[in-house]
Length: 463
Ligand code: LLP
Image: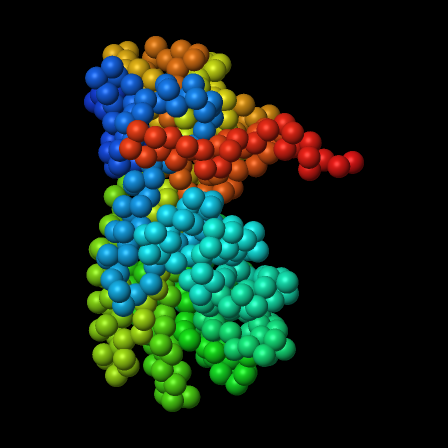
């Protein structure tokens, strides 16, 4: 699903089997800074460090598998998004990518808002004092309890996802004597070039209200008539792990067209548009993601131009990056266990985690990189598949990657760019214990989400 799916070039087809990989890098010890968190380096002893701390020390103190998150990188990325869009726009971090109390604190300190899509995410945000007005509530099937709570708290906006929800939110708010700010989520009909399960703006899927057939215009018509809601804007999220700016531009153009249609029909200029998240990140050296300032420039230009053409005042723009903020900031550290070489094929390298801490490879065919991080090696590159310890053959973490041929049990390897949708989609499959998230910053490491314990498992099991 990332763009790095290249068949082996002719030079390697003779040597290696078909697969999703390019040539082995010239030097396996060199870390490609594109895929690693900003403070990750290899020190003069050959050990990789993050925030100045050696991974071997981190493994000793926190165990493996574990996610290590570079706090300064997270904060820098928040600032880059906020700066790129400026004071006349709003950046909502998409909490589904990874959310914890510490993350919410960082967001508040760096001036970002938050997009939540469940009562659980809302609770996490409120627990550390995120002001409700800085929270947007999403979801295609919000429960009545979730809606009531969001309205009672006064969240900044609820993003309405269906005709039923327009009525439901309006009635709930009205019965509480409130007027809830809402946006309507539309599907703009863009086929984002990403995996089917994470593309969301084509028509044939569960999210949003279609634009092309006039449903979105009808939704606006109904919303404007209801007292319990104040329709402040239109929302569009076209998908995730997207590299091609064209999709965002088409989406922006179609959303502005709807604003113009609404103005023409109702004499109302909706003041906001939200263009969602979805900007891709580098999982391998083949990926070339855009920077926040590039996407900000592209969106501002297209929205500005289209609004001018329609004689509309430029609405306040918001965006909802998740992966592009947290994804690159973390890596997963594993200890190598069983190694199984298959002559003429590849070597299976088993680690002490797997699909329970990173389901993305199994679910989306996602591609990742991997490196030996506890030492350097001058051994030949060995075509490897990094697999977990779970009871199925689809338990793959890194499908195709090169590791040094002298790799041995006990070595530490790390998979970069696992900050987004890894811990947040982790499971207890095989009654495994979900790994901790450790924030590292300037020589200090602290657990922000602790490792699960067997007592945690038993506590839920009340039979
Ligand atoms: N806004 C809305 C309404 C969303 O549904 C999402 C992601 C985002 C923003 C943030 O998108 P991002 O910037 O993180 O791409 N589990 C999948 C990704 C699912 C994304 C769901 N919605 C994965 O691991 O790739």
